Image 1 (cartoon, rainbow, N blue to C red):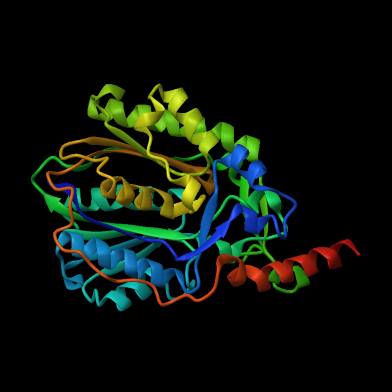
Image 2: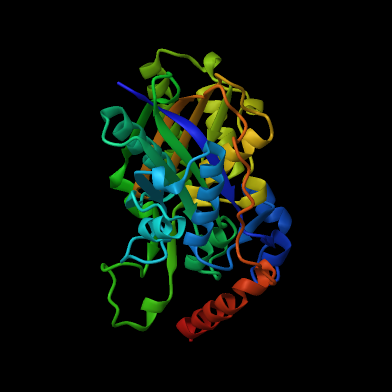
Length: 363
């Protein structure tokens, strides 16, 4: 049975920055309030489409693997903020890349979208159904934000990452994984007024709101990610001493610290970039993985533990054995279309719209 080696990786983060100080200009908050509760200092705001980010991240991943898009036979795109429901966004990305031989599937499991995709893609390669798969995770979450909800608006940002996995006889790639869902608590994270479960005949249909039960999410996230991590280590017959780096979902710094404490691993072995990007949902792990490689935090043969948790409430973990290569075979200069606005300028009209809606709802 073949393994699914990670041969390429790439990321795309929008250039427009939205700092905590920017949020304080229209939300009752401060840099200190946000930083002490989340560890987040800034986040990115996308000025084009999710598919544009996915295309750029994918081109970097394909270059790192030295593959032509025509060699890819499946694209798995993890995201809850797709360009469109029909056609699916994976097919839009396939067209943009020129991946004419690839099947295209969207995966909506929120923050676990990339990890779910890597789990599925790895097992499809192991069965022989596919040979070369592009797994993408990313979000345009600011597009769905209710900018009048402080507890949620300060958390999220936009970013995207991608990896290429290929059939290999070498025992590398995701060697153990576990995914699951605590559906009894599905309403702990919920974006309302999106989907057929909401009436389009009401005035509120054009406005998103979030149900985000922070304490419930925190408790379940730490417990589920820790248990899933223990499960994959058991599958592989390994212990935490064998793990060189943990690359977890970057929800907030408090969750990362609590996870490290619960599983019993030192914080210096946990990769953290949440301070730069906030919670980018399905984009956090692939972006963090790419940056860990850029920062020389991953060496050939290292075992890397990934864990994630998201709406649903979905969760998962994966143990990866890295291959012998930690540098791209080819570099790529793909980038997003130029952006001439700041993050605050991009969201200004949305902020005004939600402010007006909130006032009208009260009156």
